[in-house]
Length: 403
Picture 1 (cartoon, rainbow, N blue to C red):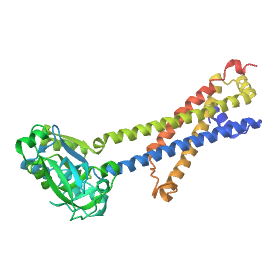
Picture 2 (picture 1 turned 45 degrees about the vertical axis):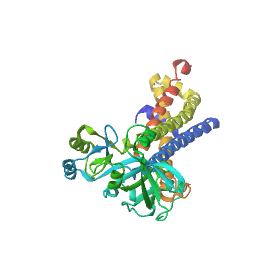
Picture 3 (picture 1 turned 90 degrees about the vertical axis):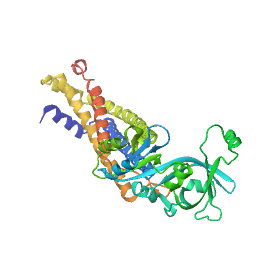
Picture 4 (picture 1 turned 120 degrees about the horizontal axis):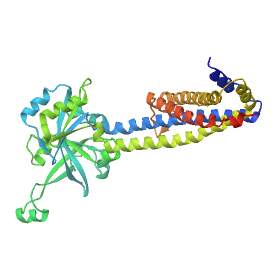
C-alpha cells in the first residue's frame, strides 16, 4: 500500500485526542453528505418537473411538423401526397389548416384559433388522450374545444339550440370599412358549431384551439383542398429524425421548414433549461460554502498532528509526500460524504417514485431517477473536493514543520 494513502486513511478512521477536532471532522462529513444529497434531490426534482411540463405539449405536438417557409399556407399537390404515403420511416402524417377566428356565444365573444384536421390527426398526435368529456367527433357542424374556451364562453357540449358561432373575415383588399362600402355585403362568414368534445392540457392551449374537419376550414377560408398551413408527421420507432427531415425536404423543397418537438417548444425548453442551470449553480454555491469546512477541518488536523508531521519529515518523508497525505485525506472525506449523500438521495427519490410521499394537489410530485444527475453530483463533489483539499494541504510548509 502507498505510504501517503496508508497514513491518510488511518487519519480518516482514527480519532483525535482533542474532542473539538473530532466534532469539527464529524460536522464536515455531515455537511458534505447533506449538501450532495440536497443537490441530487433538487436535480432529480427538476428533471421530473421538466418531463411533467413537456408532457402537456407533447400530446399536441407531432414528432415532426412541416410549416410554410413564407406566408401562412402552402400547397400539397397529388404527387407530393403519393410520395408522402410511400416515405420510409413515417408511421403516419396528417394535414391541417389553421387561422385566427372570432367566437361568439350568447353575447360573449373571444378570439381563438380554428384548426381543421384530417382523420389521421388522432393517429399522428395524442390529442384524443387529452379529452376530459365527450368524444373526438369532428364534421361540418361539430368540433372539439379546449376547456378554457368553454368556460370563457359559457359553453356546454352538444348545445344544439344555442351553438357556438365562428366568425371569419372574408378575404379582400383595403380596410374593413372600404370593403363594406364597396360590396355592401357582410365582411365575414358565420359558421355555427356544436362542441362534442372538450380537451384539457394546460391553460394557454386550453384557450387557444377549436378543432374541426379540414374541409370545413378550407371552405371557410376560401382555400382549395390542396392548401394547408402545416403537415404533422409521426415517425416510426426505428426512424432517425435527421434522415426523415432530409426525405421530407426532397418532396417539398424550400417551401417548408421542418421543426421537431423541441423546436416547436423552444421557448419552453429554454426556460426549463435556464431554471435547471440556475438552481444547479445556487446549490453548487451552497456546496462550495459547505466544503470550506473541509479546508478548516484539514488545517485543524494538520495542527493536531504537527508532531507526527515533524517525525515523518525527520525520518525522510518529503514535503510533497506530507502534503499528499492531507490532500488524500480531504479527497476521502469529500468522496465518502458525496457517495453516502447520493445514496441517501437515491433512496429518497426512489421512495417518492414508489410511494409518492410528496404531492402537488392530488398528484405525486414528479421526480426522475437519472444516471446523468448522479454523475453531475459526483463530478461536482470531485472537483470541489480537489480544490478544497489542495488549498488545505498547501498550508504545510518547511517553516511549519521546522523544529
